[in-house]
Length: 293
Length: 192
Image 1 (cartoon, rainbow over the protein chains, first blue to last red):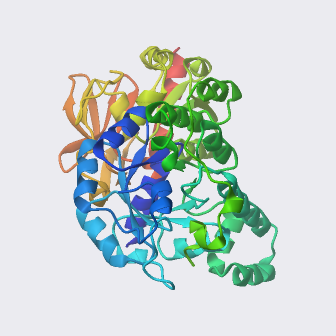
Image 2 (image 1 turned 90 degrees about the vertical axis):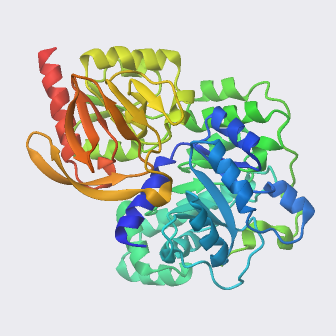
């Protein structure tokens, strides 16, 4: 991936800012998402809550199904590959997907290495729970970061924790002198040059979106107020009682995230959100956020 | 001078930082009433179909009226929104500038590209042009001036102070096109 390609790929990520990226499992859902105002869709065979329920190995979706979704909508289409599975990524690049999500929601294919994303032309988004993880993914070539949250739970607490953690760790860097910067780079296990750049700019070099556990318009607006630049919604749309209305309301809440009157307006009479899971009932082993290194 | 930036979805934050470098006041536009004290308007890149769904009728009517007397600049998705006609697929648009655009005309993200192009601004300038899932301008009215082409396709056009670019000057690190737009706004303002 050349410098030009970085500009193009981070550029596409920037064009997705202020929007909602929705998980869809077929072309009808993709059209509902697009009609509701999604800025992109994530094509996958099972939404996270079903992956969680069914267990087993979750892999890249059938390329035929991804193509059907790609042909059904005019907005960019993303799809997921397993962490470290560079061949699944080669297949999606060949298919002409707009963004590849190297995702903890699927079962990891490699317990040590993430994909060398510099080897690809297609942009990647990767999950992160803290700044060190985000910077490692960026140094591997990710063009977009999304905080992981805890996918498929309808519980926003982990997403909030992750975005607050990244924000706090960046604020901390802005206070460090040069020698402290080296110690902090060691602690975060991230390149010191990237820390130095954050100290100057106050932000990540790529957009930082939020994901995992968004179930309501208020959840989406909360992540935006905490500094997310866009929101991924997985099970929150198509496991709710009225997907089209939830989709539309979450899109409106993401754009007008700082307008309580508008948030009140879109939050009412939506029906039931997705079934949710309390974090205490999940063992560490069941938490998807721990996948990735 | 105050320049509005449509902030429904997309790359609006990048334009705000370029405009600040040019020492103009910036205002985020989400409703028609936000346009009142703006002297010009940027409609940024992003997803045109998303923006269409998020804007109210009052906003779109406001922008159409605004564009009759003050400059509007649409970038990529913004150029689609201000077109007279949109295809691939057909989509509503504002008709602020007499062009027809075709969405995603180059293909998906793997077909996005960067080209170095000579652009006819206040004088001719050679600029890096970043095209991301870009539209093509496929039809042009009689009063539209073409300011730049790339492989024979118009990529920057202007009519009555309203501008459409299918590339993203805000991603190239150059502020020349923004400077040109701000000067255009200044001209319109002094004539009002």
